[in-house]
Image 1: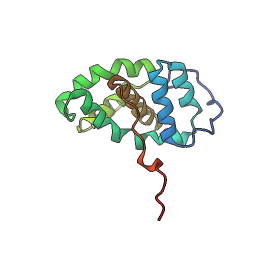
Image 2 (image 1 turned 60 degrees about the horizontal axis):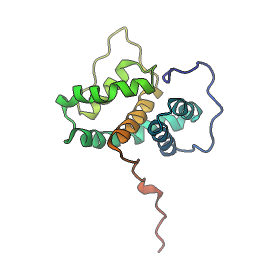
Image 3 (image 1 turned 180 degrees about the vertical axis):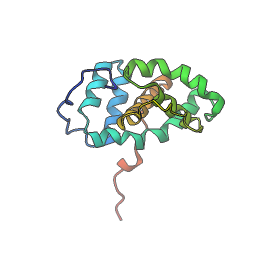
Length: 160
């Protein structure tokens, strides 16, 4: 399992986590608190569709956050630095993470083609890139001392 936790059936889903934005908020909170067990519980208790939704909401934030860390928009020659800055913490939080998943995510942040997979290399589980994107977002927010941006869709509709 990606989190390095126990195998088997997932925990009972938490019905309060109804969307990916709420799951991302919980992931960021767990990372900020330095509570890996809490992070793993939140990830295990999310409905599959909510977890997979992290793939839609986290990547758009990653390039901007990586740019803040680097001081400029990420480019190909920044890949090594991003790896050094993020790899250890991400692997600490996700000890079961297959190495190509983080590499692929970081190459996309740097707007590079993804690394080629070896012929004998297994395709990662569909949830791996989604969860990794959420965790990397949390690690970058923590490193930058920033909060998760407010979603503009949360505003009340205008009356008129």
